Length: 355
View 1 (tube, rainbow, N blue to C red):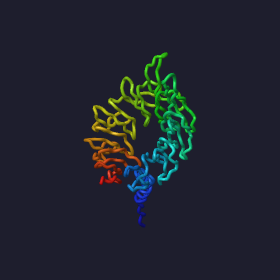
View 2 (view 1 turned 135 degrees about the horizontal axis):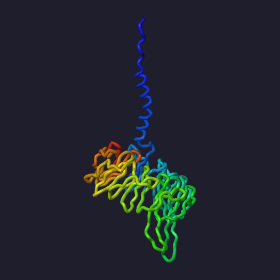
View 3 (view 1 turned 60 degrees about the vertical axis):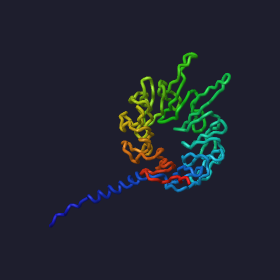
View 4 (view 1 turned 180 degrees about the vertical axis):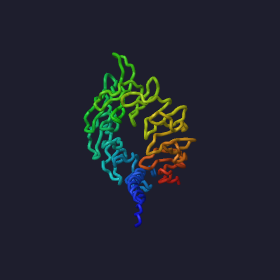
C-alpha cells in the first residue's frame, strides 16, 4: 500500500495572502487618487471656474474670485459679494457677505461691514458678527479679536476664543493667538511691572484657558506631530507638550513639522529635519515648502520641482512656479501658463496660450 503523499498548502497560503492584501492595495491606490468630486479653481478669460481631476471644466468661469472647495462648499465672489457654491456650481449660500473664507469644522468666518462672525453650512449665523477679526475654527474653538476704544484714539485690542455655539469660551486677554492644535494653543501676553511694559512673551493654554506652558518664549508656533517650534534667547528649539525641550536646531529659520519633516534654512539654503532633529534632506534648495501628500515643493536653479521624504526628485524642477499637492493635483506655471499636474508630473490642464 502506497503511503499518502503530503498535500502542499503553499498555493492556498499564497491565495489567502493575495486576498488579504487586495483591500490594502486598493486602499493605497484610493488614498493617492483624487476624490471623485474634487474641484480645482482655474482662471479663464479673467473669470474663475473649476475643473475636475481629469481637467474637464465642470463649473463655468463666472466668478471674480474663488477659494478651493472645503467640506463640500467653495467660497466665491461675484459683483463684490461672497457666497458659497456646491460641486455642481449651484449656490447653496447666496452672495451676501463682504468677505468669506472656507469652511473648517463645519464653520466659516465671514465679514459683514467691519464685523466678523461665523456661519454654518446653511448660511445661518452661529456666531453673530461683532468681532474686529477672526481666525478659523480648530478643535472646537476659534480665536476672535475684540477692540475697545479708550481715551482719545487709543484702542485696546485683545484676543480670546469662542466655541462652536458662539459662546465666549476664553475671555479676550491675549495680544495674539494661534489656533488650537493637539489640545494646546500658542498665545502672546503682555509683561508688565506696575505701569512699565516689559514686552511680550508666548506660552500655551489648554481649552479651559489655564496655562499648560507658562509664557517665556519670544515666538511660538502651534504643535504639530507632538512638537512645537519656539524661539528664546538661546535660539530656535522644538518643545514637547510638557514644555521640555526636545532638541535645539541650528538654523536661521525653521518651520513646523508636516508629515514627519520640518524645513529649516541656514546661509540662504533650505533642507529638512526629522522629528529627532537630524538633517535628513541636505540644505541645498533656494526655497522650499512643507510636505503635503507625500511631496514637497522645492526650488533649485531658479525652477521648481517636487521631492519625496528622502529628498529624491519625483517630479524634476522645471516649473516657473509651483504649489503644494492638494487632492491629488498641484497647480504650477509652465511656459508662462497656469497648469495642473498629477503626481507623475503629467499635465492634466493648462490655460490656453495667448492668441
